[in-house]
Image (cartoon, rainbow, N blue to C red):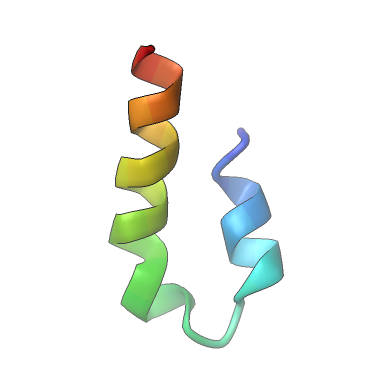
Length: 31
């Protein structure tokens, strides 16, 4: 649930970066 931090940090532009945040954190989780 690390990606939740992205939503908390940028709740306004969440819709714009939600996919980037998920991909970013998912990439870290993969590693």
